[in-house]
Amino acid sequence: MNTRKKHTGNDDEAEAQSSFRKRKLRTVVKPGKVLPAGARRGTVLTALGPHWLVAPEITDHGLDAVSLMVCSVSGTVDAQGGTTLVAVGDVVWFVSSGSAMEVGGQEYAEGTIEKVETRRTLLSRKAAGRVQREQVLAANIDRLGIVIAAANPDYHRGLIDRYLIAADKGDLEPFIIVNKMDLVSGELETLIAEDLEVYTKALRRKVFFVSTVSGFGIDLLTEFLNGATTLLAGQSGVGKSSLINHITQNHLRVGSISQATGKGRHTTTSALLVPLPRGGFVIDSPGTREFSIWELDLQEIMYYFEEFDDYSPNCKFSTCTHTHEPGCAVKDAVDKGAINAGRYFSYLALRAEIEG
Ligand SMILES: Nc1nc2c(ncn2[C@@H]2O[C@H](COP(=O)(O)OP(=O)(O)OP(=O)(O)O)[C@@H](O)[C@H]2O)c(=O)[nH]1
Ligand SMILES: [Mg+2]
Ligand SMILES: [Zn+2]
Image (cartoon, rainbow, N blue to C red):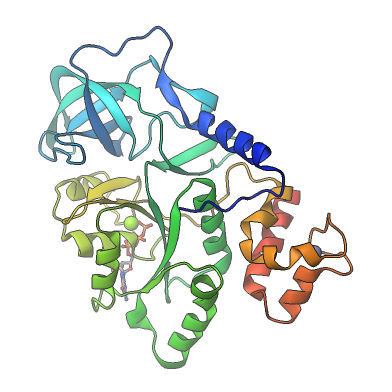
């Protein structure tokens, strides 16, 4: 887990900022409302139209994959700060209504979510549209697997750097998966390895090179995924769903649910939590072309580029933004190749986006 401080301010200030954010994560039962008798604990697997598919908990970490419930959300569940009410990965308390509902040709017991537990971690982004709103993509995850393809589609370093910041903000451990390695060889393969070297060397992140077609690298990745909850995110078509199918060998029937609601396309339309054969979970998510980080201030951006920290104290001005100022030690380090130019470019692009 990343404990690096993002602000140069004192510890109290950093602590206050962090507890402010944590308070905002809280989704609780409205005051005065008591959890109904017979309420059971479960985990949200996916959205089914306006409802949520919930797996009841059988042991501390075990989920009952047979008696899945389709739940609506009780009006007494309150999302503080206008954040997403329920998200995949949420731990919820639900009551069974005793009736059944058919979704996608499958019959499920019906229930109502009465409470959403405080989220331990989350990945969120700025929701599309004009209104400033946070969209929680998934809750209670340990790691963020940033999936890119070696080819088809080409990857953008800028998107990787955005996901790294979102992971940092959400207290997730990010790593990179480069899929479709079967499509490249020789010089191109070397170029990709060199291009991504900054993530392993300067940022000390794991990078897995894999192919779901040839099976290359899958064992190592599977080993790493075991026991933790990982969200796979990335552009559409990079192979997130293919990877999950390959690793889990479709071993849970919820795999067919996502297809049933997939409107005949293979593209993933809503996040889906899938248990791993040897413990832990992996969450599939719909592909995103762009990714806007939720609540990112202009002044804050530089602190997410941790490799700048080694040079920024030597900038001529203490208020240096590392963009145009004379005597900037960060720009100097970029020119000398000590800071990766692609990362610096991502920094400038993020600033430009926020400055508008
Ligand atoms: N050559 C090659 N093709 C792959 C590989 N993995 C997946 N594909 C193909 O890439 C396409 C997209 O795969 P998906 O798994 O649907 O991609 P996704 O990331 O889940 O896409 P969205 O759900 O739209 O976000 C499919 O046609 C797969 O067969 C791979 O390792 N090599
Ligand atoms: Mg998919
Ligand atoms: Zn500077």
